[in-house]
Image (tube, rainbow, N blue to C red; front, top):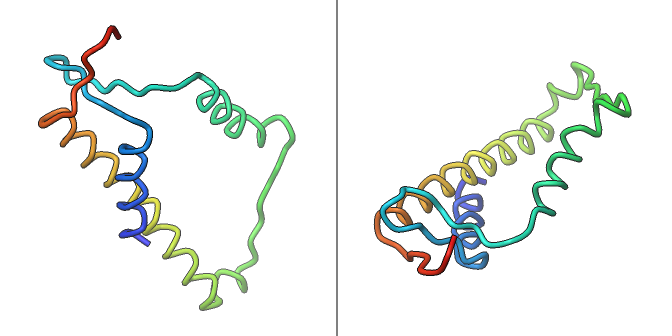
Length: 101
């Protein structure tokens, strides 16, 4: 799970063309506002539609549920750690964005 998250984060930085802005400790992320709008919509949807996920205690105690829970937790930790590592490496060593910001 965690190794998969690290690889996905590295691929995201490479494929999206994320670069550092020289001498500012900032990242240049090319793209549009659509990804931000989708994220906000995903976060607000449960509040508008009263969407709840309920789990019974018997579900939590099943080994198959614990396996998927730990794998997904490892994936999300790997995604976070990978993005932090790639951002740090990018700001320190490049590639750098040379156009107008």
